[in-house]
Image 1 (cartoon, one colour):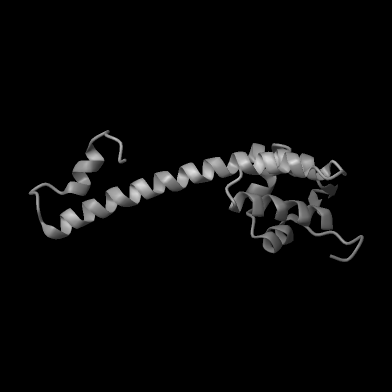
Image 2 (image 1 turned 120 degrees about the horizontal axis):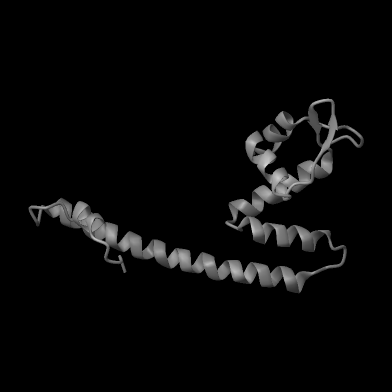
Length: 138
C-alpha cells in the first residue's frame, strides 16, 4: 500500500480473503484494532492489512483465537520473544498431533466400514450401524 493511503473494509476483505463479518468480529473481540473512521466507513492502512493477513495465516495453521492473541502480543512486544513464541507453537503442535491421531483412527474405521459394505457381508449396513453406536472408533 502507498504510505498514507487507506482502504475500506470491502477492499481489505478482497485483499485478504477474509469475510467482512469476520473482520468486524475480530474487531469486536479485540483481535483487530479498531480502524479510523471517516463518516460511517472504516478505513484501514497498511498495518491493518498486515495484521489481518497474520491472523488469517495463523487461523489457517489451526491456531485458536487466544493463541493468535498471544502471538500478536508477543510480536508487538518489540524485543524478540522467540522462546515464548516457541512455547505457544509447541503447545499447538501437541494439539495438531492429537488431531492427526484422531483422523487416522477415523480413517481406519471408515476404511473398514467401506470394505464391509463393498463385500456385502452383513445384512445391516456397517457404516450406519457404527454411526448408531456410541463406542469410540479407535
